[in-house]
Length: 402
Ligand code: 2IO
Image (cartoon, rainbow, N blue to C red; front, side, top):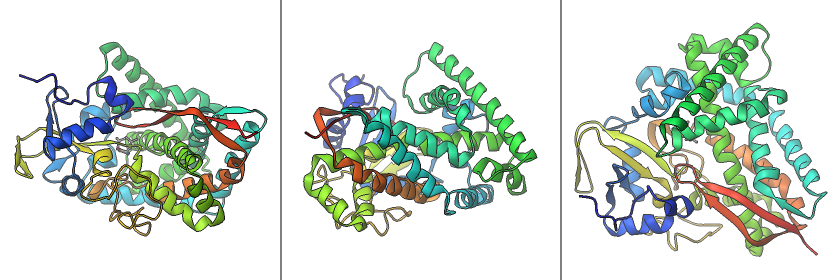
């Protein structure tokens, strides 16, 4: 019988601010069974990392129900063994060939500058809407090769895909609307793949259309991958840029540190990702019964790796809720690799393949924003955050300095 005083992820409070709930869960032990969500929440840093590194005992086959209905085929996060390695390798080569080439980063810089020029014509701005979201959409579309004229059309489709995959509850009506939207998005992508195969350009869809099949990717899998990359690359990007700006403007010493020495920017990003990981939950399913820190979890159970809780584990990070620029326990050197001291990019076999790309995109965008930030300050109650599976600012209001 569930106890209704027990902390649960299925409540509005968790969407507004999950951190007090994580603390209450942690008080009950490092593994907490959320009855309402029917999931075992793992809260400690070391345990989360252990689970993510054991892809035999903790599988990601839940994506067959959570992602495949909208993506239309299996994605890398569902694969293992030689198939996984081969298809991941071609995808990573595609990302490198498209984004690490001397054209992409300057293009990002232009996008960010032109958004700030537009913002500069006003006295007040809501930065999620005016900067972070259009930035995320534009740079992700540019990577994949989706022309500007389509962006407005695909955004609601992408929203539906994101919601289908990340919302812990949905009504049958919402579910069918999202499935329909996803169908339009897949049809659009298939069309894009076929047209890029006929006349390739310098973008990731062209790359995968041309070389994907030699790594065993079917067209349906390339479509799934394109949708996966669109959501996985754009959804966390606007959130992290908004947090970077918010942390910088609310602490003058941080602003000083990043403007006087751009060498501090990677550290700024590293600590932002620890304190505000945009992906808060990484689910897994137990294969066979599993023992985690003395708690026995039955076969086939849902386990939630709670990234936001692990990244603020007090036994790992001193003063864990505080932003500390040069944290010794959060090394910038390892921050974008599988041995990172934070878990914002996951860990193990399915460690984020876009970590390096994210680093470059965000460092470029943040650096280009710094000269403009001088003219702005946070308004009162500037920041509104929302979300649990993916979480970030939904409002960040700035006003011109007098
Ligand atoms: C989208 C959830 C934003 C991924 C999923 C099918 C796979 C995978 C993740 C991240 C972030 C998104 N899961 N990226 O958690 O590709």
